[in-house]
Image (cartoon, rainbow, N blue to C red):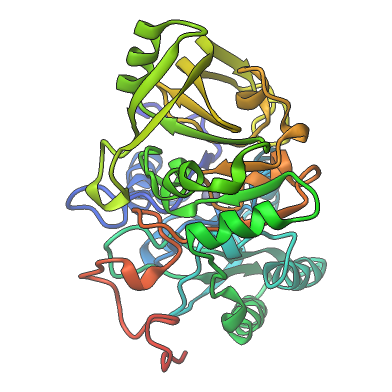
Length: 402
Ligand SMILES: [Zn+2]
């Protein structure tokens, strides 16, 4: 940004949890670079993902920050429009609002952060109630992202108002509400074998089995085999229909050698991280083979084109193992439909994600069960090898207080 004379202000869409080597607060660095180019007097407004890890440096870097209100995130467009509206308000009034934020010594994981469910449903209701006051510009409840080894992980609140006192009051009210509900942010996880058995015993399907530890959207490789191994071993699966997607270009190549309708036999998954399970031997008919490109059909980035690369679907008894050469984020139903499966007709649908499965499958799922398998995005934070995290931190340190 070299020529800024004709710029009134800058509105950005940031994430807020970016970490680079040697740069713990990469988003604050971006804001500082924009400020440097823009000069001290013109406003900067940004939207941010509610998985941001807020810091004093980040919030000081912009005149106003607007966090997403939803998880699954379906309000990026609305928050972008809100950010533009607030930029206009700053430009009209000639000065930005007062800001207050609170950082909480509290880690939460995506499986417990859905804003349509308790405890975040109640936190968001309070946020919206407080935001309705004319002197409050904007308030955000911030979820944080626990999968980085930096000191400043954790949940937070952020508020902007006409006066400092009001901003402090709103930020404090939201922080107090989150903290009071901290126990409810603890994940409820089942072991893989128990989860598969429970799903098979359910009176109706589809039951969604969620493996947050291998959440591709969180940075996991998508080839973890903790849940796949339990599904492949489940004796009761005969006569039922289940699906799981695994990122494995080598296995796709092996399926291509066999050809559509041929018999595939080989190891799949488990190629990236020893932590996330060994490759699993499977054998079955190649039921689909070919490139898969589709447009998302649900509320998360509806219309976005997704390229799964080459895909092979292997029929292992009733288990459909979908092998892809590009990593899959299951935020719509198309990855199943595109390979000849009808999601509504499946008994079990396994997914590698946090809360995002609700966008695509919330209305057809009979139940969702969160499965505890090892992986880089585990919801079992006691397994995270933190070396720099600020302590004490709830729930790792139950005695943590604010
Ligand atoms: Zn997010």
